Image 1 (cartoon, helix red, strand yellow):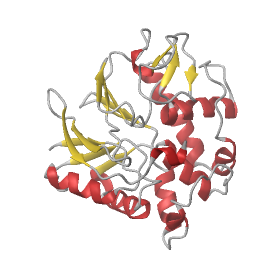
Image 2 (cartoon, helix red, strand yellow; image 1 turned 180 degrees about the vertical axis):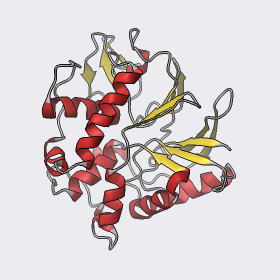
Image 3 (cartoon, rainbow, N blue to C red; image 1 turned 90 degrees about the vertical axis):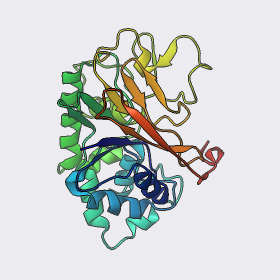
Image 4 (cartoon, rainbow, N blue to C red; image 1 turned 30 degrees about the horizontal axis):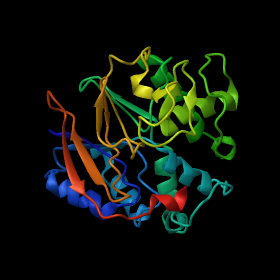
Length: 279
């Protein structure tokens, strides 16, 4: 059995299907891990959701920031809507089933046999793996529970920006959510710098990629993540970044995880969006 982690799709289903053909994916034997952001800005968000859902137990996907954005829209929070790209999902006859399925995806997946953990964006330096798993399950329970509408109404924001185990309620849940779905850079003091984007190297010295923080407590864990298209394919400090910018005319990545050395396969993609449209 082969296990492949797939980079951010964002509604680019044709590219996903071409990549699965290139790796000779066998749905009877193989398994797929999706690093999140199944939807938004690409042309086939609705079809992508249906395809991944219908894979059933052959696929595992964690929630990304664009997936949460769709869930917020479905819950009635339209304050941060920046396009109509998700309208086909929200108007689909099977909308409720798809939203329910998506709302019950995890924020973190850990496979002790493969010795790999998957998140969409990152982990703060203060968390060890046990803390990360506990925090993920805590917020998943809120997203899947009866108070999810209120959660999606209050989810957006950049504060608090530093972990404190004493955080409570929405402040705590927002921090956890931002780590799993939005994180790229942290300060040397361990604060999240959520507004900072772009590739590493141009930022001030006090900012560094989350996975390069010298005191990161998950440095001994193998972590695969997406979210950071300008980073490109990255292998550093026991982490593998596999968002290679399919949506923007880059590549779509499949990383085989069940090998002694994880091996990537890439598919060149046409540009589906101009990133400057969303700046």
